[in-house]
Length: 442
Image (cartoon, rainbow, N blue to C red):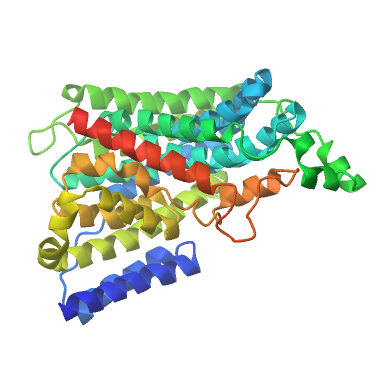
């Protein structure tokens, strides 16, 4: 028992130090944790998550190629046209737009280009920008668990296959997509009348007396004057064709060749070669330079995710495998009686580990060791997003900085910020809905 707690403190300390360092530190220190568990405590190292890392690598490379080809700019421009055509409903349409933008691209980083547009539409319509801005930032991250090309979803796909319960990509999306949409709508409904209107907000009216502040409000923010090339539009079509190909092959596995085990080629492998192939198509069609792909923001963020999952998932799996008997004997019964407690644990971990894929890399092996079935873990998947809790995530900070009125903010007491209640409503609602859907389907 003492050995378990010593190892637990080691693993927890590695995670906390990695979080404080940021970037790839989580992966590097995770690898250090594996070394200490193996050499210091004589624990057998588990297999590193190679398949999952390769999936993320393939998807991120294709998404980064789309970004360099101008495809993300085109998607943002289409979204702005929608918002400006129905400005009165920006509090509903904006979060739905950021949610589906993430679903399409597989990354929440696409939201940065859209946030100043959302703020501008709200301001010029007389709507308090905090209303759409806060929930739009939250919704952009909620879309990750509903994206067929997001790292969190591909990690779950690989994890389920390794666990011997190979859920399909369609199974995952059937649970997380409706749950995510309902969660976003619930949070947007609450946001519709939050705070005072700008003409009744004494703090905002007082700031209007500053001429520099008034001038900043009059600035015109738009992407509609940006010329989008035909190849950029075609790159979006190609990217969606790649996603569609994966979904089609997942629906009809009999079309796939047989692997050495006489079963159709695993979807974890299919995702890899299909996304690389369509990334190549985008590169050729848009005449994209390879070095630009490697320097793109999407590629950089994706590589950080790969390294983080490499170290942290390997360390967590090694720790859990070495202490599986202790965990099942002491915690398994409680979790089986009240599985919702596992969702709370996942949520708490995500508040510090600012990546849903990395959070799942920590929690899913633990859930499996505790005897929780894979369908149940799928139903609790939306709880892997909680890094809105401290409002230090880049999309939240971007929303604060891009709201020229100052209504989107972090409060005096740190936790009373603009994202807290929309985040809690969105995540709790989507988790409950996903849990219900998974119980019904499986």
